Image 1 (cartoon, rainbow, N blue to C red):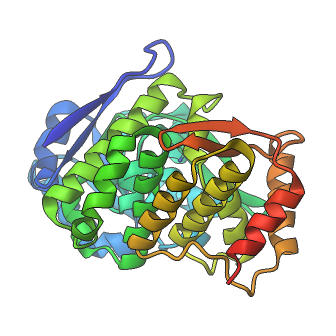
Image 2 (image 1 turned 180 degrees about the horizontal axis):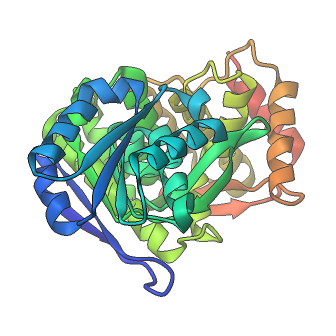
Length: 364
Ligand code: GLY
């Protein structure tokens, strides 16, 4: 098991460790009891994960003589709303949860975000631990303390920053992940290579085949490296006021297309096409070398994603979703663009005509 320390400003937040390895769930009861003592532990999970891994974790905690309960809600993004959160809170009250309790977020991004939000608000905050079970949650959403639920007007519009006390990343969870779920996370992994680490990007080019076969040493390397990159960015900009925005590479157009598809498109496919659009804009406006664009598009394809926008989604619909993003952040849409692999920058001035042309190129 590898340990990665997230060092945060102690005046604001507590630093914490990310543990990455294959053996973690076998020992988690022991580690939690020793390093994260609490009067009561409450596992928060969804209907898919509870049968697969929740019952086992509950038994382990109880077997250690710890007070433990589990709260479950229906799986899926549709559950990521305030009424699900209130339902969980009511169950916590019934169980008798107080500030000496610790929440364990066992699941993907939805579970992590909603549990984090409740942990930041319940009785003016209590500790929580992230136990991410999807690749996307392991390399991205479980690290950095962003919590949220969705509103009818958009994703993640109601949330807080509340750092977890620890993150336990067991790579064994990845063995049973569907291909679509695996690809969602893989796009975040590729994103880290593009925005931060040309050497890691090269590793992904060389080993994509082994990664997609989920070979243990390859998975260990990509998850550990991704966690290190994310924690490095969060340490510098915990509250998303500057550098952390580079993590949105590929997500501005990606989210707009995903929303325009009424969420029929997978998040991985949306981020893939968003990254392809961002590199094409970067090549046109900021001299990104053509060779870098070709390498990025090739790597995304080798990960099994097309990077295309389905013909059925109109440009008007995508542009109107992009303008909703604009409303969220003053008057300009901030795009993360690229000077070369490993060198991103934020740009608010992409002419609508360029956006239009690039998206038209990607519609197939
Ligand atoms: N997933 C983007 C961030 O954590 O800032």
